[in-house]
Length: 97
Image (cartoon, rainbow, N blue to C red; front, side, top):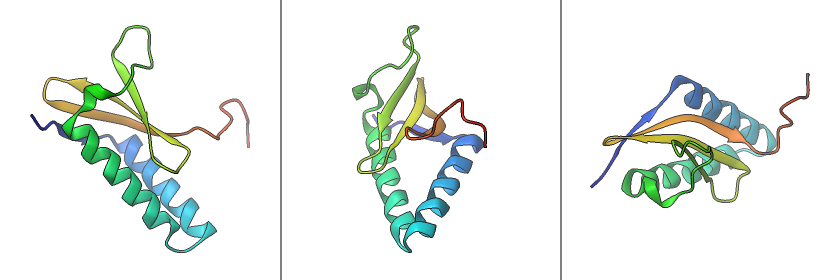
């Protein structure tokens, strides 16, 4: 069974921020990021239950994006995979800019 992906506005914003960040580093690198992300989305739509839970209630899951330091944070609900955020694992959560 193939699951339908729902990408939240927050996750879309995360995608675009990462894309522009990598494009600023090197033109074309942002496209490679989006390609890796799309590959992982395709895998999630096929087998979202392959990846581990990240909360004690066993609702929220996460999966790493190949090559890039990001996690896709998502939930499986019925026939849907709801992507909440694309989390940069290198960001320090308590640093104020």
